[in-house]
Length: 578
Image (cartoon, rainbow, N blue to C red):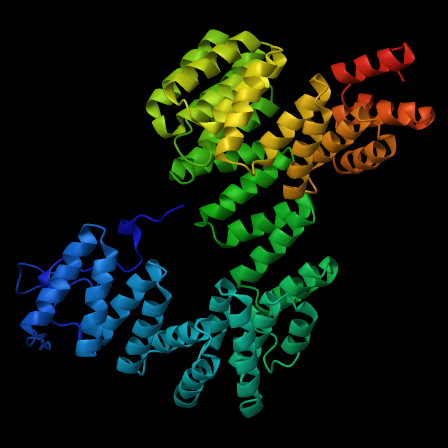
């Protein structure tokens, strides 16, 4: 997702009023509130600001105008030039923030160094200079910056530098690790260095070493160290130890929200929903204004089928006007679970644009299809496409899938044709039409659509596999099918759908041993009824009838109405049951 320039963390200045005092007034700092009453505001001596030259003011104003027109490249050029010319910390910081936003490495490095030079007492400036030097591979210089701060300040918070390294490359982290080690040789008891090195080791995947490093901390009982220990133990699969360490930490820091939240999330990950619910309830009792906790507790209550508590917390979110769309969506889920479809429909219709919008529309469509209200379904989604034009393609696909699953193939076909008149080159719509064409035995249309997709995206494994499988299953173009499926397999070697296709084309070619090998892999990864039909057929022809029946039986238990399983059984055994 591209960040809007308007959301830049440090927005550009808005006018000349802030340009006259960068050295005294931090950029972006709001002016003091004014009042018309002299009695309300004490008389203060006028504040003296340093002034820029006329050329500098003009250059900075030009930068502002460029930023307002989204020409951040020009804004950066001007700010960087004035940072060099004036040595002003505020201008240098602004140049650095713009360079970071533009992901301009050289400009980020230069502006960070200018900022650090002009603001030697700013830890933020020094840390940013160190990380930029490390990113540029200048690890020795990065450590020199760190050590200067260490000597001057003592409490350096170098753990923030280690955290920033999470977004860097392996080489940068290795250089930082080496620098931390050399600093620790001179300052062996510095807690920030010890903790920062443990963080770097964790980011590098060296969890056991990170655990050992944390044991050297003179204050290992600090909440941040406990959280890191628990995460390391968790990643190593030692969940009980992680839970025990968190609970020890909660005993030491009973008011620390982070520790309690980590415990609740670990319980949730371990699928101990009852204990997780109790932990989140305790958190919400301690922090009643935290609506994220309230939503989490509502979702856990849903999973625990505690409808009353789930309804209570979702209702509270609506009253507080927080997480409104999520609350309506999950209320819809709750009503569905309670077999109240009309209430569920009402809740889903109130979900607005956002992450829950399309899932809500999908549930709406399914509920209306289940009750055979197809005209209402069509009207509702047509209205949704008009209101949310950016979601139109997704809503077309959603409706087509719902209609196809409801065995209304012709209606789905007509809908996709309508969508393609509006969006003729949309690859998702073309793929869906290809799949509907297969159901209509229109293999010419299927191949045309899939070939067009591949002309646009030659490495589209899904299209390669769909075309290859169809050629193997519905034609005698087996060699061509094998070539397509093998190319898809090179792109996604673990995809069970591709493994199934690879097994099936080898079966068609008479390579039964290879077919069995690939189909076994596919069935182990995804025991789907279609894969079961294919594997059972190959096993049957290889004389392994007992195992074939076992595979079919397992698949029929999961999907008793599978047409491909019934057809395969009837064709090979003369019966519809294994």
